[in-house]
Length: 221
Image (cartoon, rainbow, N blue to C red):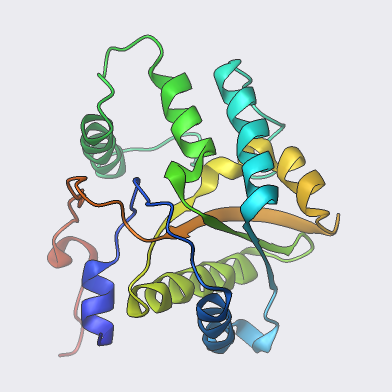
């Protein structure tokens, strides 16, 4: 699979099979991902790879919290800015409507938030979740570096025939996650990335993207 195919076929999959993912495959991906760029070569990220019984325990704990209506832990960073304006709100609303429909959750369902949280906390059935952290002393530049690292991981996973779903949702339960992982207190949870093979028979969802002309300006060429 070339890089263009990996980029085009990468999407947030929300229905995984229970087929196990070989450790040696993940080691190959994570080794290659060390080549992701970072300013000053700081490489400010740290990843925990969780599967099997530990992941089952984590899913059980976070799903119980979600179903109980637990709003989650005090946020360590905002998921979105307090104020969003067009065109960002338009893109957000369109993508959300597509996701809810694909998950079979009606927009006016009074239990919508709880159902969505429960699906997320089960990692959509994925057999592996990568929890990506970075040193909490780092600044915006290193957060951007961590984002490039996560994207590199997801493209390499596609090259191996795997799918993924990046989930900032896990930060809502960062204390539960950190306790189970034994995560270093000097680290802050950036996101989880659910990993696995896509479940057969589930219609794929591809959210739309803004036209390139809306987000790119060419100057001097």
